[in-house]
Length: 301
Image 1 (cartoon, rainbow, N blue to C red):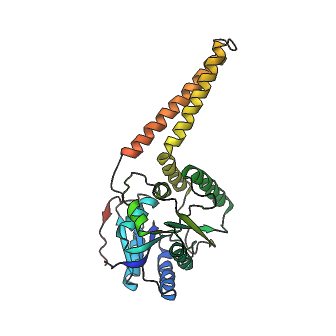
Image 2: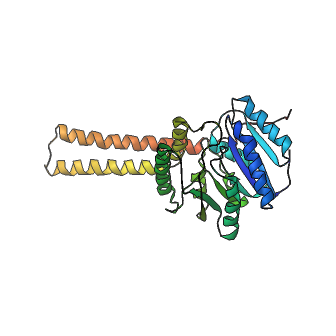
Image 3: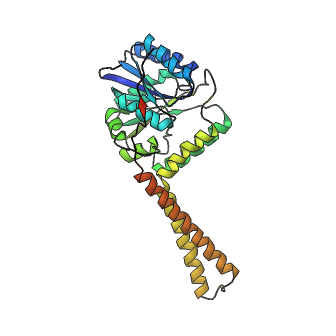
């Protein structure tokens, strides 16, 4: 399917999602109608192994004429799926959200108003309430680390529900990495960030696809993209421990014994970690492949 340029594209990455697809399609289109928004919905199917995912998407396409889809040949991960959706997005503004309805489609209008009324390139939805103490703790911890590494404003949390303008989308698509992290890419493109506050709902159907392994994989993308920061920290630790132990040895404060050997060993351990992190940074920087991954056509039957 092809669409002319519209006001808003809503990109939704999905992986083995079935129950929520028809409901989120319905709710988003209700928002488009109520707010008089010319919009489209793009489901980015991230190599789902459940055949019902594609079947349900196709049913939604047949029911609503403003839905499109992109099919990845395997599970590349959430951020690649989002970028694949950006490739075919026709909107002046692009909203990204999850498919589980924990983020309310009604807040799309609030995001649109915030980015239109202010000089922002990106506006994030910051949630005033979340469910699940464990997930809440790790989300806050990840957000804290991410904000400090990326120099995001302290009061803005990078949530998976956000809106960007077309210029920012086009800049994002110029990057090509094996494990892209959209937060990192946004921090490299712009500092004109905004936020709105909204409620965080309970998942309507099914179970979350965010297992502990997927959350670790998501966090590792940030780590490898910013591994040079950690590399610098470990190099500083090497310089400090080696310098202090050497100075103390020269001043006869410590002798050439197990204590001195221990300090030297620790300092070179820090150096080794620093070198490994630099190596990982260069691999991640130079291993380039198509930002969308492999995409196949979707013939609706």
